[in-house]
Image 1 (cartoon, helix red, strand yellow):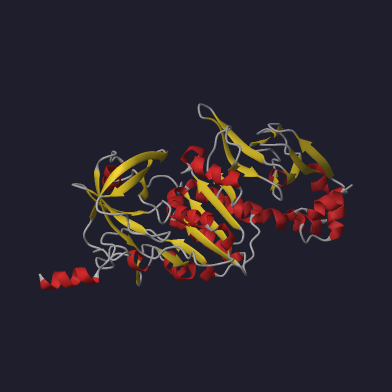
Image 2 (cartoon, rainbow over the protein chains, first blue to last red; image 1 turned 180 degrees about the vertical axis):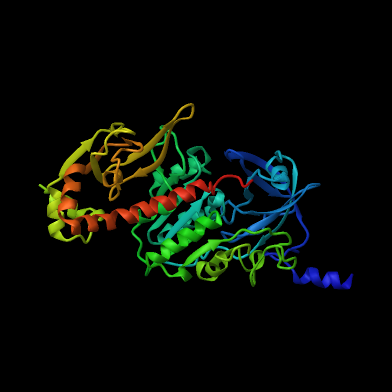
Length: 287
Length: 153
């Protein structure tokens, strides 16, 4: 017992609460943001949520079903926790289908987020599919202090027009013109008037100054591999490209090893890494 | 008034090409405009033109019975379509329809092929420019086939 107490004292999440015990929260809102994608608005039972850095994640518990690592998709500093979940497996299905008033467990926040302290930088944000969710807090942060950054561009690729996550909000950002936005989809019918093609096809449309740009990438790993390679070909140093990795995170505190990728633990050392660090690991099959 | 030679020289597809070759190609060129929603070509028709888009966007589409019309690629300023001009049977393998008002330079395919036959160095230079486009589009097709954004099975 003494050992366990010591263990708990030494493993705290980002805001000092024990990292291995879920805190109780309640779902206050649930909204569909794309087919099979739901956004939950969570109020903590005890207090305001721990503040978090864009790119960090929480472990969410659907009581009686299980726990899953879910990126935070809301704005930093808010009174509520916002998480966007794809209904794809038993735990995410249970989480995504929680109704307002239902309890939910929250551990976190965990991990290393996006490098937002980069004054003056041009920021190129490249998202694929649900990868926009972990990037949305960084976009909120940029919009909140827009003058601190240079040119900001969002390139976002989706499967079909109807799969564009946060579509109405993305269009609102486009209308505001504070950031440049290019959307593309893999497949579209005749009603779609935007781009069709892979997200790397949008890169030539971006005026990239490698001396002052950073790139934030989140999406399927194959997509990030190709985008990372394309960006380095355009002269952007691999240390200035950041990728958010996804693995099977279970404990979130670097103990269980489920999310180990080579010498790194995605939950503890990431999920955001430099492309320079991940590039050799991304090309290793079965890793 | 911009000449056809200047238009070709300013297009990324011709970037770095020997000016004499640009001069040769401009003899096959036409400045063309299309209204929004206009069909530029249809699948199965003779691929008699190669297009260099200057302004606007063009959707490349395939119709499938029972599944409607699907756009598989859009091309915009600085990009090209109609590579079918270079290889037999010189037929369009898709429909091309403008998304919005579009300006392009159209190169007459027969004229260009004759010039390439007569001046192999021009043919080689153009082939070297077409190949990267083909490779990029093949790579994009593979990526799209992976259906990366779909739900993993």
